[in-house]
Image (cartoon, rainbow, N blue to C red; front, side, top):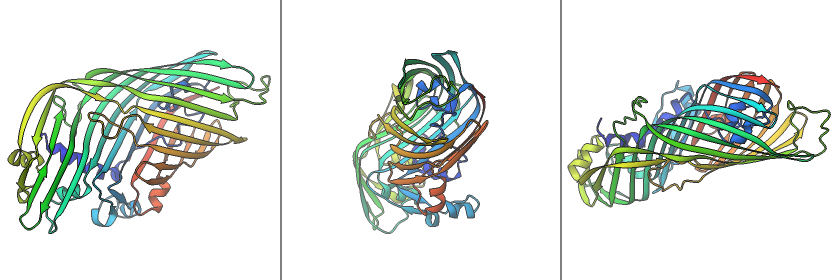
Length: 441
């Protein structure tokens, strides 16, 4: 595979989002009966669960978006899934557009109680992240159109970065009750992860500027572009047979305020709190890939844009000087901070406020990052059934409204389903589905 064709793949990858039948656990993970899925955001949830044990069979999740275009999902549904870029999207080009995709397959996993004060779990996952940050939207549009335009334009992309990374992980989770008195309850947990990296692609340019002359069909650029790929990695056909080891960790704590609890009338199958507060840091760690091939292009030149034919590698090689080296390259995990406040309104009614913040700066090279979000989610929760409707405010300026349900072993939903259907320019989308075996207290 030609290496720099991956640059086009990076730019176009986000257009796949509307065809993904995939998921993200927005709204579900805060459910007191979510079991293994709650460990993804806070490992302390493994202990003092409403479940004796929980076994995940298979769950699939994805979350993606861009601030470059908004998608009219209702038109796509009516056209049976086909995408007309002109009619189904509204474009918002800038000098610093961003694209994001996170796919997560939760494989066979389980959790169970060791003792009244401690529990353990094992979580297996396969994950893939894609970030493209600070790309010129106008440059992206013209690359997509093979510079087949009749107007001049210029661009200035500072701190352009992009990373595709795929890996598998197995995590050992341990949680313990730290404080348990009349009104206060505190528990902590940690997940130690063994990582198996399938590889990655990364690019960066500290300052990439240019002007396109429509009359002469020339592209004059300045700056430098560094492009790298781990050994034998193919993002269009990810192969988990040649893996690189690494290590990671999650750590978290949960506090519950439990006023007026009658200890003689409640057991571990009951929720005892009026207010629950959780905080955690996830995905601490990295994977070091030996023999990564890195190519550096000197972009200080004028190129004939009429020769561009969707082969980015050929265009760069024909118009710019370059150097190549083989090095060991570390790719960092998407480290993030999570905060949860869950309030028990009355009976089976709850409302939660969840914040997810990236601890990786958007212009960091050789790294992935989540997009920042704040989610408010009212829910009806019972042992066998839960119904929730999360409302989120997301980093790309998008408002998302979704719905989901848990019915025994099945959960399904989306944190943006309703807003995607109502809006004619949705910038993010997500959905999820999963099957598990819950063993209730």
